[in-house]
Image (cartoon, rainbow, N blue to C red; front, side, top):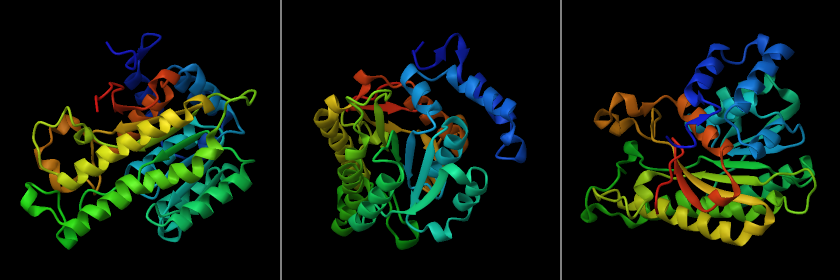
Length: 310
C-alpha cells in the first residue's frame, strides 16, 4: 500500500468521512472544541512540515482560480485545515458569490483578489498586495486555473490533428502553461523559506492532468490540452531546479475526473466511482500536498499520491 494511503493505520477516507460529518461552515465551527477536533483529524494525515505550516497563524496560502469548481472546494477546505491567512484569487471577485460568502466565516484571515492568469498586470498587482499584507510571505500557492474546452464556442479537445486550430491552441498555452509560469515569476520570491527560522518548506502546486504524461499517452488526441499541460509539467520541473535550495517544493497534480463544468462533456465515459465530487477532489489533493516531502519536488502526482512519470 502506498505511503500516502495510511498514516498511523488510519485510512485517509476515514478521516475525511469524519470531517464531513461536521457539516459545512455553520456557526458551530467557531466552537474551540470543534476546531481542536478538526486539527486533530488533519494531523493524522499531514506530514511534519504540513502540520507546522497548517497550524501557523502567520502562514499564508494563495489559491488561484478559486471562484468555482476545484478551486472553490480547495479554498473551502483550507479554511478548515489551514490556520493562517488565505488569499482567494479569481478573474471576477465581484461576481464570485460563493467565494465571497466564505468571508463571513473567517473575515480576519480571508481575502479575495482579482487575478487573471492571462493578464500579467493582475498577477503583479495581486503579488504586491499579498506581499504588503503578509510581510513578504507565501507558504502555499495552489493554481487551479485551466482550460480544456469552450463548448459554447465550438472549441472542444481535438480528436485528430486535422482539427487543430492555432488560435485555440495558443489560448490553451496562455492559460495552462504561460499563466502558471507568470504566477511563479511574481509569487516565487515570496515563497523562499531557507535561512528563515521557524519556517518549513513552502509548496507551489499547479493542477495538471494524467494526459500530460508522454509515457502514459496510449490514446492520442486532445492535442492542445496535452501539449500545454505537458509544458506546465516542464515549467514546474525547471522551477524546482532553480528554487530547490530556497526551501520550495514545486509539484503538479492530477485530480482525476472531477464533476465540474470542465469535465461535463466527457462524463458519460467515466466510471461513476471515478467521477469525484469537488469536495472529495479537494480533500484528496490537499492530502497529497500535506504528505509532500522535500524529495518530491519537480514531480507530477495523482490524487491518490502515486507519482505519474512525465
